[in-house]
Length: 445
Image (cartoon, rainbow, N blue to C red):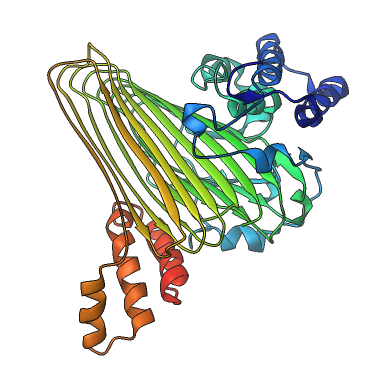
């Protein structure tokens, strides 16, 4: 048994059975390298099992609620309609969007027609058929299956997801929206979306990776996104997690950056009973930078976990990171952020901050910002705060005639507002501001 994991046969058996059923029913079709990758991944998952809290990176998050339930591959049936897609379109149904329902590509709900010349947005299954060289060059090359059981499980079942290729020197002016909807047909099922994004040299694009639900079914989303940001490119990636509050969500984003590139990330998480978002990037070209921001808001008994890792692997690179959390009732938040500076990465400039606001005496957060520095000419700082609403500010507002609950809501929204303001796409920022206002101020946009 691998230390810190569970390989209980009863827990793993449904996944192993589903893998063999798919493999024997035509689902094993594809190039030899892909079949080999899938088989190696399911074997690795069988060896690793689910992580336990004895694993350092999972110390504050127990996946027992996932492991103890039996989730099977989703059936093709769906109840989602075009009206649901428009509801989640940020007010811009004309944006190019590729839609997946219960983990499966829904071409009838997608729109990928108005793209700049050379830009491709495909379902993974179509990309494997139409552009196998591009896919084979990047798919499975960034996501780590050796130590990550959830990534191994995703790799074993990867069949649907978005493949995006931005050619060199192309600027995509409007966001590309990847929408993953789970509806009532997803109950007791698992989906494994696999996305691949390649931003060519000196290109610029924005991609929204959006998870939402129609209804309140209990299901499991296990997503992996691999991103290659080539020399001089800028890729902005927004991940919005608004799953059913009875659902479970594990999502991993792994990025490799070339020289003078910039990766901009924003993670917004309010859904799921238990969620975990991993964002890992390697600054693998001199002069590149990473900006990782995020906001998580939970209540009731929700559990939300964010893990980030920024690896400075070349000189003269920068990283900036601000995550904020708002926790109410009996909710639990986790933030574990690591900045790793290799010996070669001189002139590194890194800043990392995690601030948390507890609205209830029973809410709690475990925060662990970390620096591991093996170079001697660097500027790196990190910090974390956990606190409650400012009683002086509350008193001042109440003394000016503002009701206690309204004052509390305004101060809570103000705490979140500055990180939301870093979102550069107006429609996305305004929508998420509206979600925040609705949650804490009882009013929408």
